[in-house]
Image (tube, rainbow, N blue to C red; front, side, top):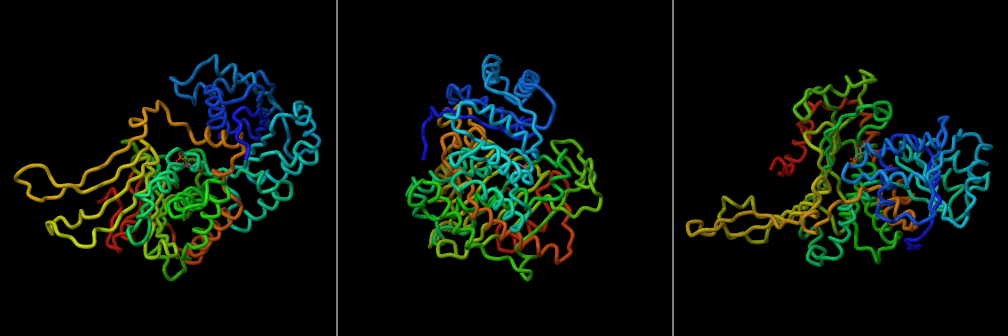
Length: 491
Ligand code: BG6
């Protein structure tokens, strides 16, 4: 494992003028440079199909940085000196001859070469082959690819095979940006550095787990992509299942990439199949109709710009996942995610079982289980709900639930929490794969998600409607209430 912060890198960024690169990747590189983490001599080759020259692209990138970086964090001198590292290369990704120009740019082979494909996945194979044919990469090159890796198990195998024909698995960095979020990494510290939790983390002590990833945005300009994917492919197959794995996995032997990924794969393999006979109790899919967001009226999914009015694509999914192993037998993981929900919120709630014998006021029995709330965004932190006696002579032994609170920004006085892409790019530069997804993880996740999608198709049932600005179809509340529980906000 390379762990040298002074590593000089040459980053070839394919799709450099696209939305992801401009919104996330260049701002992340700028922040790394601002923090002094880009080694002297590190360079970026921005590659795209648009006719332009380096000065024009630098100017455009400067404007985009100014737009996407917070005012307080934007420094024009730092931006200009960062952009000195950036060159532009026009390239038709399909044209093998064009790659000679990339080879010419790479005149300092001592720099670690990183290839970042911020392109549609259908281009990964052709870029990989052309880079190899032009001798633009070798067995040390690190290759970063974005999701989605395919739209089902079969298509993901094709993409992984194409990449695998040129690169070894230890060269491939498959991004799931949730793994770069500070609080997501903290799940590993929380679970395995605190015996208090480690010793309670199983079916003897936990009754159920909730994972919510809610967004208030709709589909906006991404209708074409999103309608082919839907919320289950866009969010569940990757981000939600990764969160579930980090919560559910057994302790890895060490922090190496493969030890962690081996444990995550075991969880994915143990996920109970959701067969057609249990679909209506285990899965709810929804699609938003017109409603409000942030107090303003917003259109429904089918009225968004470019929409196909007959689309049955889901913008909301709630699922009950069960893990068939010793640690989690009988502990449901309720997961839900959707667009146009009332707020942007990602959180995990661990519901502990009540104490074995309850001796307090019977009317307060519903309070008698501890909850650990892990806030991934916004306001990153954790809160442990514990029971104490209410204050005052007149209160007797009345119970009260209060939080033990840890808000990262306050407790650790951090002025800023780095964006996920900063962390991920930084780890690629160091050559650490532990925050990236291995081929078998992608494939087991698809295997599980595919069966749900197949069942939906076979049933022919349309998604249930929910008004924008609400917490999804009422059926998702019914799904959890049927088990005698409620989503945390509803409690
Ligand atoms: C992306 C999805 O992977 O994650 C988007 O494609 C979604 O649809 C986004 O909006 C959410 O990421 P975050 O970091 O804003 O929660």
